[in-house]
Image (cartoon, rainbow, N blue to C red; front, side):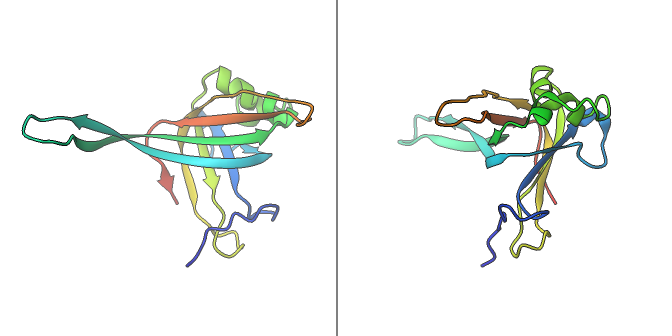
Length: 159
């Protein structure tokens, strides 16, 4: 069995999330999101359910999927608010906060890791919007963290 190994802490091999502004048609993603604590990739098919008088049980059929990515990150000030030294209009210039509040359509790419720490694993990519920001800090957690959801529009692409 070949398990996907995300290689935490191993440079160029660990799980990564990269985003770019969709309208820029970037060849490579503009913003590498640091401080990932966890990622959940959701591919949830909706189900249409109905009853019939000649059946004792409900009938169901799968319909379109609702796709999203959910994660938690440790906030990096430059990534959160944007890098004024980057190219105007790109994701790294805008920052996660404004990408969300401005409802900017993004391209995203997640590298999952691979089976042998060799950097040859698969990616999942698509388009979506950043939502669900809720930064928090406490005495027991003295760095800012936030959940982030990327609500996917359309299908995932696996490469």
